[in-house]
Length: 376
Image 1 (tube, one colour):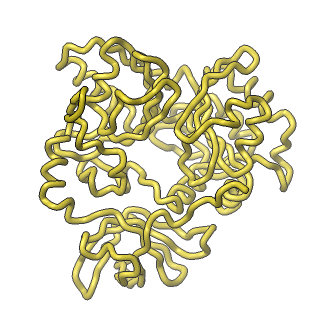
Image 2: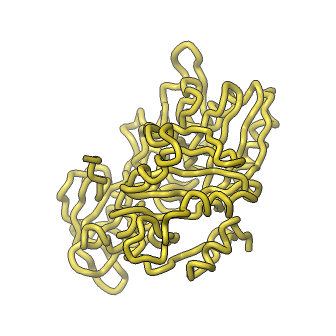
C-alpha cells in the first residue's frame, strides 16, 4: 500500500490503520465518537494526503478546465477555490473536485483518492482530442495535505499569519513557513470552520513540529487532536456533504446529488461561452422537469442505523434507496441520506427503510443535519 508522509505520525498516535483506495490510512485513534466530538468542540487534524493533487498549467488551462468542470472557471480570481463536478457524457459524476486558481494560466485541482488515476486518464484523453496547450502534473506523491477542522482551528493558525486568520471561505493564500512554501485554503468537509495545508512531502515533519510546538495532543483537553477516516465520514454525513461512491457516481445524474450550485447549465452563454462534458445530457434532464429522484435527509426512529443500499418504501412501494447512514454523535439520533422520489421531498414525510431483517421508521428532513454555530 501507499503511505502518506504522515505515516509515522499516525503510528506515534496509536492509529488503527486500514487500506483505503490503496493507501495505508488511519481509521481511528482514540475512538470515532471522541474524535468526532473533538472536531465539533475544538479541533481535529486529518491526513488527507491520499487525495490527488493535479497541477494544470498552460495557455489552454482555463479553457481545458471549462471543458471538464461543470462550474464556471473563467471568472475565478487568483487565490480563489471552487467546488465543481467532473461529469461523463451522460451527465453522471466522474468525481467531485476543488479547483484552485494560482495564476492566470496556473491551476491546481484536488480529486478523490479512489478516482485519481481515472481522472488523470480522462484528462489526458480530453487534452489529446483538443488543440489546447495544457500540462497536467500529478503532484500527489511529491506533496502532503493536512486538514485542520474545528471552531478553534483558525485562531491557532492565525497566530502564524494574520492573512490566514482573515481568509474568506473558499479562498487560499501561499505562505512561507521557515523555508517551507505552503498553500493554505479555507474550505472543509466537516461542517466546521478550518483550513487545509498543502506542502512538500519532505517538509511535513518540520512543519508539524513548528505549527504544533505548544500543543500536547496527548492531553485530554488538547485544542487539537488527530482524527481518522471514521470521524471524517460521520462529520461529513452530519454536514450533508456527498461522498463519491455513495451520493455521487458515474451512474448517478449530477442534478440528483444536491449540489446544483456547482453545475453551471448557462455556461454556454455570456461573453465567453463554454460547454462542459455532460452539459447536453443535464440540460435535457432539467428541461424534462429534473431527475426522478433527488438526495434527501432522513431522521430515523430508534437506535438502529440505515446503511447504503437499503430500500426506502412508502405504503409498501419502493420510493428510494439509502446512500449513507450513521448514528449522529452530535444530534444523538440515527441519520441517513438517500435518493427519494422527487414528489416525496417535502420535509416531515414519513417513510420506511427496509433493513432486510426488519423496518426502520424515518422522516425526511432538509440537509444539512448540522450547521456549525456562527462565531461570537
